[in-house]
Image (cartoon, rainbow, N blue to C red; front, side, top):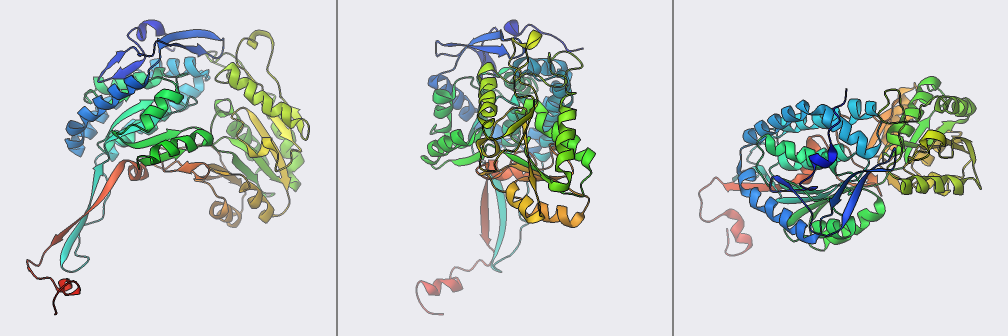
Length: 504
């Protein structure tokens, strides 16, 4: 049974976390965390303002010498303790994540929370395994080796769709590598990010290593990613906002990490297991109410299977149970807000002029009318260049299009600005091998869609950004590589000096 704590009491000291303690923001503006299932206010808190960012960055900068100077083993031990503290509070994290996002309990219990905690355990181990090139005499006269050093203070901005997971993906590789961090979660969903940071301090990670500022992107987010003491800006969100972050960060030549929008293709060849593809498409399209940048949004189905696929998806979508996130049998919860629900509905309504809405395409009434719900929606007959096919909807909407030859299927899969994730469905290893090589995406699943693991990287191509989250590859983002070269000859006059002065 989920522990239902009193959120207002839990965050009575505020929704900012700086230098190891909760405190109130300084903007003078109150913001409400709203339960999207009911529209009720969960928590009212004072938003941060740019001065709060300055304080958080100074706290992170002050904590940097101690944390970056700790041994990898010391950082690892602290992170293992952090993982243990988190596991003791699993129920609280499950409840808070479902409350602020509207996620069904089973998604929080079986995906978001355990996946995030597994990330902590992974990076606790990875902290001791920062890779480098083995020392060697590559010139013959010198010994060379590579050091990996922390960058400094990291400024990260995370989205609302997976608040706990995104906090983990931003914080963990940064601190495992010896950096300190200031995280700005979405002002809609700050609860689990704050709890995550608090647990780290309780586990013995020094105050100031992890700080959280809860505020709006236009002032707090922009101040953070452009702050002169911030060495790297990391952002997950829309491609449009990512462009703005890039402008701000490159103005001071910061390291930049961007995980942006997606429009994942789901390519079904004519020899695929049809039942598996239908089940995979519904699960891949509807996870987190479709609010997932890797969600299956464009299914391209080879013509011999097309009609059966559409029929199968429509039938399976009709069985999905939409309802209260805290009801044990709920499959699909609400979208994050009524405003976002209306945005998704707008995409579908505009598509009706040139496409067919097979099922869904509306908000439910009755007892769910107060929430930000939208029914699972299947669309066919949409032109490839239409908005519904090309742009990120970020809701429970799947568009299905037919294709004929393999060349066409792969070309259509690549025919959007995005390249975050994709899947290919076939029993033919040559077909799947071609798909994994030629589809332009940072992750290509074969005969599945959505699963992620801590050991493997996540990040995109093209307008989906650059850089990797999770895995040891993420250390490429959060460390500075330094080449150290020692002379081993002891000679004052080197042979190469003659290219500058004198003769041999």
